[in-house]
Amino acid sequence: MSLRINDTAPNFTAETTQGTVSFHDWLGDSWGVLFSHPKDFTPVCTTELGALAKLQPDFEKRNVKVIGLSVDPISDHNAWLDDIADVSGMRPEYPIIADTELAVAKAYHMLPASEGDSFSGRTAVDNQTVRSVFIIGPDKKIKLSLTYPMATGRNFAELLRVIDSIQMTGKHKVATPADWKKGDDVIIVPAVSNDEAEKLFPDGWETVKPYLRKVKDPS
Image (cartoon, rainbow, N blue to C red; front, side):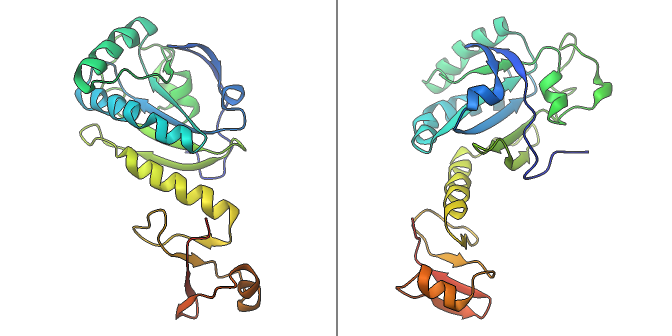
């Protein structure tokens, strides 16, 4: 059974390129992005880790910590970081988990329990479902999960857009429409009556349909 939105993100203790991490303690009061990779020294993942390294300051501005995961040992991770720096011009400064016993991949239901307990002898194809992204809130609840095919690189700007939406809609009684970007109009949630909306949004709103009321971005 896969993890769902609002499930508690499984806690774990693991070795990373920046030492031992106890995940919930490491998150603290921050948001988190956990993104996983089936194998070190794979082409698409190499570009992804470099792209995320360039965007790390944008995640930090949103109080978001980033942590990677790959089913390989620390020694391979450290050598791979050199390749990533060569390819992207940026060496990742976020930790990367060495999930050599497949424990985190299994805890997050990216691999079935029957897949053994060692990275040894496994190929990227064996681990192809270990290509997921989880956005986790300070409450340790999963806010988003996505799994990508091996040949499709991830769009980290989209993750920033989603985080902007989740953080804003968690503070205000609004939702974001399709293709929304920070600063665009938002939608008053249906649970808010017009009387309540007048107090929350005194500058008014546009009624497109009785159930679709657009208002300026309150953030």
